[in-house]
Length: 424
Image (cartoon, rainbow, N blue to C red):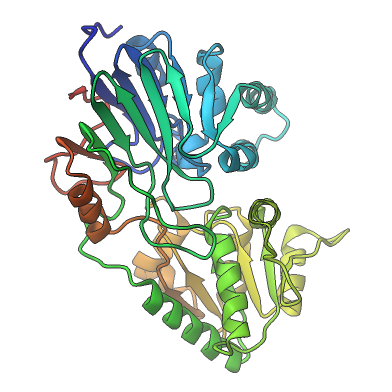
């Protein structure tokens, strides 16, 4: 157990410090114990935050906060909640609707080779129990924990994503960005920063250590060009996507491109978990994502999954499917194998890759790339702040202290490491 003075304020990254995945950040502030996020890693050998460390540091928690519904931030919330069954879980209304689907799918993927095992059903039961502890809040509502108050700020990134403000003492203020972007997207606005000056700013750093700048306008034009060229040579297109956020953005971009005449009319099938997430997005946004050209991939009775994918490729010009990183065993991986020998086809990546993924190897391993005759392109539509945006956030907020997390640092200066005790 970590002993601390009543007026001592600490941050301990339990996961997601010097890495992307398993985000979990313990705050001891104003005498309260608050955990922000409880995610998973894409490494099946070590998927969870260090819950044993967390339990030893903080036998009880006053609040659990989930910033958004990507599984690297919420995928282990049911396991965390089972350790703290009396602790409420706070999140936004949108995240609450998306979280249950995303965590359930993460459980299903984890047990894909051991379906209906006792461990799988135990996790589903724990998820049901955790969902009963969710408390949904609007942006800018104040969650009062004695002398400490928690506020959600719009973070951009994806629908419902929140940055977390923690107010304590006479003027203390922690601002935890979560995954953040100042750039508006078709499915969500940009982040809205607080007016208060933080005592401590804790910022994601996914792209902070890269000098690459993201131009959304250039990425869209390059994307349309690749789609147009592929369709004109009668080739099929696969766009691997994250089910939550990226899939819906790509769907709207394809519809917009056809409407504006920048790409020819084409039939788009949306497959995998992206189908279900897109239905939730339509309800939350009160806006149609599916239309005459962009449709959910049909189901085929009596066909194997690979046969269904082959049928979809016969019917559609473009497949938008999960996973975005071409993880083995996912629908997009099957589609990629089917298209790999077609020189007229194209696979268009649109986002981040972890080194464990097949998509990363395809982009970086020449031996893997040689086995694919189809065109491989990457047009980056980032939902994260780049280095310039993060520097803008730091400059506008002018915090007393800054700590970076959720990234792979090329310098340890100002970066919070897993298990490190950070005082502020």
